[in-house]
Amino acid sequence: MNIIDTRSNINFINPHRCIKNIPLFQIKGVEYELKSKNFTDIIFQSIPSVEFFNESNILENKRIYTMGASTKEFLLKKGIDSVCPKIPGSFELNKLILNNEDHAKYLIVKGKDGLSDVYNHLDKNGKNAQELICYKRFKLKNYEIFKEDFFKADAVIFSSIFAVKIFFDEIYSKDVNAKLFGISNRIIDHISSLGYKARLIDYFSDNLIKSIKDSI
Image (cartoon, rainbow, N blue to C red; front, side):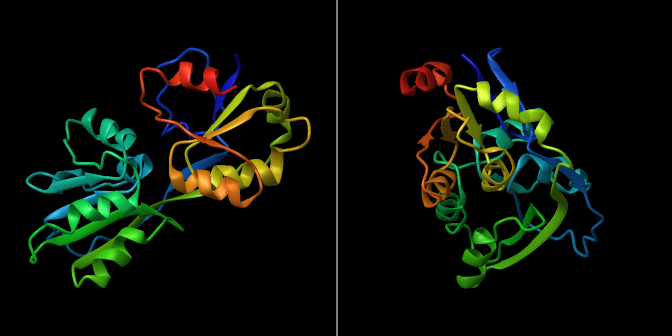
């Protein structure tokens, strides 16, 4: 079975040999200025937000949150524990953080053009929150070299809407027969809005390969 995971190299965690990583975009850190370090809660929206955040020294004695298990696991490798919702995504994370005390000060670390759902939710509820952009994503110069791999694939896994957009803009054709999978409901809904079917998967499940095989 040929399975392709479209995560960036930074995001890619591969416990299965039969999964091939073909990133559809690159990630680059950007310069930023953190004017204040007086935060009680820090929220990392993705693995790259952890990778390109330069002030790891301020994480001590802070409440740390992530949107999903992959970012939580990435932080653990750096010796930093965090809280993440059982169901990945901003909707469930918002439920967790809104129960904090009123004097909490939030720093939300994200990429350029990344979702502002968490910030908007906190701001709407009168919380003290600030966003910090520490990286950006950009398309590759050439996708022709990857098309044959996708034509031969049985399954393609998407971990971001950006990857979905690139896939359908640059790669997809009638020669692609692979089943499509997403790691969040937001991704599944976006694929559905384009007129295609996709299934939700738990990327860190011990039965990931079996669940993909059973769907094909």
